[in-house]
Length: 219
Image 1 (cartoon, rainbow, N blue to C red):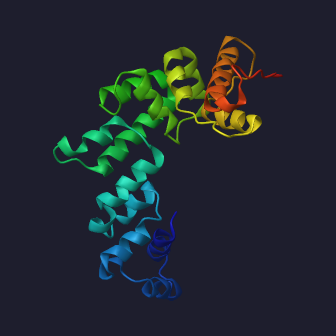
Image 2 (image 1 turned 60 degrees about the horizontal axis):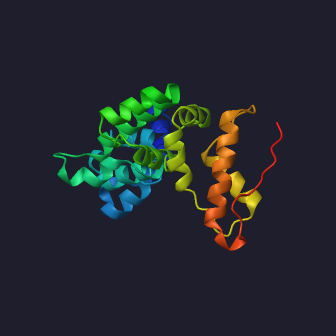
């Protein structure tokens, strides 16, 4: 929990003079210039920010704070391009919907996909879904792998988003497996992603004069 809320919780859970003195030394954010209060609250995660809203409602519900939280966890969702046309749009509400979408995906990626589509967060085409997967930080690797194994057309688009220009081959491969989690066993999916990586690496580095990079894998 953030420093601000730890101090508040200590105050609420203890009647000691020492703790009351500690809280008294911490300034009331509502009495500070707004930009300073927002700068302090910008260090909180979503849970702490919601709790801070019980004390500093206006500051903690500032759209700038929630916009930053959305973009830091989900770098791309199609709805970002349409917010100006959505009446009473709220980044805080969007965060809650995206959080639920992530939880759903991490339980069942195909239900997660349905949730994203039904709530208009992404468009129903491989390129848009690939952008969401590429720029989302909270998706479980094994669920992402399960989804891509079944949706090879999305995998194709995800590979196109990778940039391996001027990268050492082993480093590029590590980066790739950070995006596309490798299966634990040999099989069609492993062969497919290695093939796609090879083609993409060569395309990003045309000066090498290679059409394909051959990679040996051991399990």
